[in-house]
Length: 389
Image (spheres, rainbow, N blue to C red):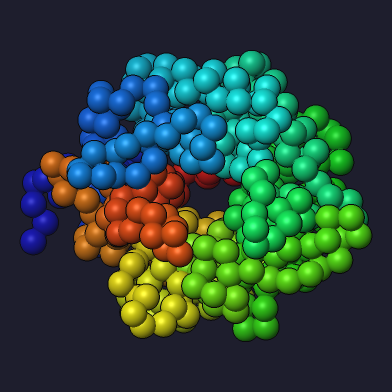
């Protein structure tokens, strides 16, 4: 039986263009509960860079860390509806601190897209701030400068490793950084940014996506000749395995790349990877951190993979002939996260059981800021938000 509270919610949704079906009222409930927790977190941490939850509270990283854009991105997502000027102010303060990182070439790596799409580009698109446009275009130029012409890939990390020559390493995560380059081409009219993005994406198609559409995390190329040398397990269980979050990065990244370019190969990849992810997940909501991890290494889950994949499925649904199916699956996953994996009300974070880096045993089965971001982004898309990427 529909209650007065339900009727009020339907009226509210009709006004704001939100879901009106009783079966979809959970979306509004999840959004409101999550927004409330974001406001509570903001009251404590202000303009900082939360990363993972420990002992019920978010711990912060420095602005150099690759996840630094997700919390201000959350502030933008919630603030665009609430109109809370304090959220916007803190997001802008984060952005100013992040600009300082751009002046240190040893701190800049491939994750400029993750950082600047959710900060500078978000601010510019929502408020027309020219300083944010300037910062974001600088970030795009620095990302383009990491392109290795011989191997047609964007270099990932700066650090040295005893296991690989990182001068020639690319990783699957970088598919999610390409929209910064596509945006820069659209914004400036200069096609060079998009050319680099497309060439990197084609390299990923060739060397990262296996038959059957499982995905490897890390590929090492000869930095001089561009020759593909070997695959590495990276954050996955082993060479040849299927790291769950890497699968979701690829799914989401190719769906976004298709949206910018219309290249049929990108849509085919996004659909194939989506089908692999969903088949590997089965009836579950949250996967084991690596679909192919063996016992006794299956105790860590990764809810962030579900959140990223769900938001990516909603992007894919815009373009695929199977869009209804992908949208239904995205809704199923987000609903499952809300019902079964919401963090306790008296603890920070939105979604429990995320895993940062199982091979290094770092932050296992905890809320993570990018899991929270993509969970909120997925909810926002179900409510009609078109997205920033």
